[in-house]
Length: 16
Image 1 (cartoon, rainbow, N blue to C red):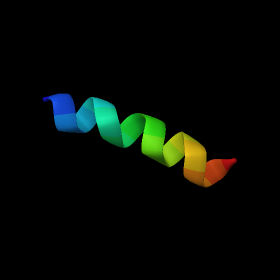
Image 2 (image 1 turned 90 degrees about the horizontal axis):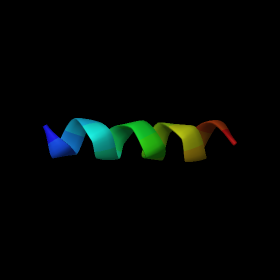
Image 3 (image 1 turned 90 degrees about the vertical axis):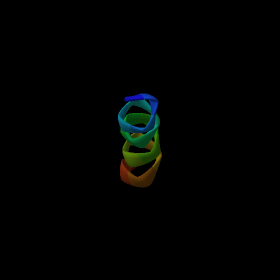
C-alpha cells in the first residue's frame, strides 16, 4: 500500500 501513497506525490509533480 506504500506504492499507492508514492504514486500520489508523483502525480502531483506531473501536474505542476
